[in-house]
Amino acid sequence: MGMVLNEHLFDERDLARITKRSVASVRRDRLLKKGCPYIGSSVRYLPSDVEAWLESLPSRGRHQDMAASKS
Image (cartoon, rainbow, N blue to C red; front, top):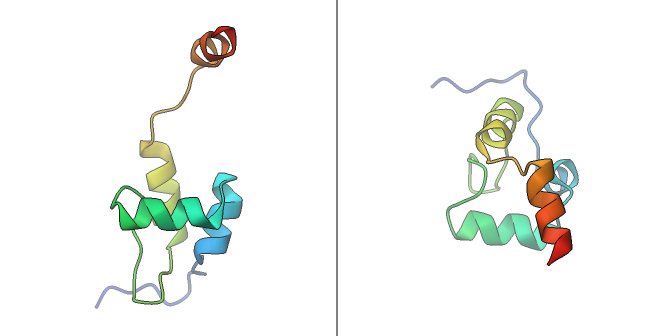
């Protein structure tokens, strides 16, 4: 197996802290299959997977934030 043994694994609390979201939001996204890829039944995240997942998310630009604040 290609498991990386020296890499620290994140748990859902770590992912919530990194993304500035609640643990409940992280769990909901995972259940809806739109969250970060995880490994194992105890739900752990490889830092490299978290980084790739965050980079794949659409980023909100400044103009979108300003438009949202005007409505």
